[in-house]
Length: 283
Image (tube, rainbow, N blue to C red; front, side, top):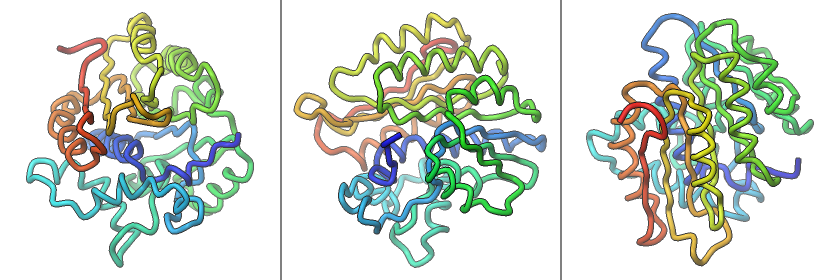
């Protein structure tokens, strides 16, 4: 309950997460039928990067700050456009003063028929999020432990949807909770697209986490990772990863195009790297 995303908003991990989330939303919009996005750890929704907290870490400078004005290759620019255009729309005077968290980004990309359910456990943050979407009937904000939503809010009535699970990793056992939460939700909503975020840092049990995911025998799981530096000389975040369950059939090839460019612009040392692999499913 002490975690505040404002210190990390717009960093390289947000760039990866939000670029992929935008691709998932765009893909579901190829059909007219409505869908719902369920955001289990929503935060406050919109971040002021000139705030004392954001300026204290300056993490956004090495994330969205590098990417927003970059000259992207012709094959990458259209893939990142839904995400970057949303950021630019919040900053019409240029630069990045305001940065959209996942609920705000989702709302900016949604159509009239689509809906968002945003869960936030911290009372003050939940009130801030509620105020952001006050009067917007497309969005339902609930003060709730996001882990509980993986049972109580599945399946959505639309029967189509994206479930973003983005815990703060404040306490031990979050990798295990991700696996358990996915299994619980998938049992109730097997047709959903799930996007699970996790940190990469020294000592993180990534191999064990991936093995546990494989053991669930959920048929299709894609892994995307971006490391911006070596983890040998730091105890902090060196990268982040996403597990996408039931990914769009286009996503693996899109990531082949996107990830090397994110590495190019966001790398902090020569050990930066990416992965784009199937844990289960298509090869």
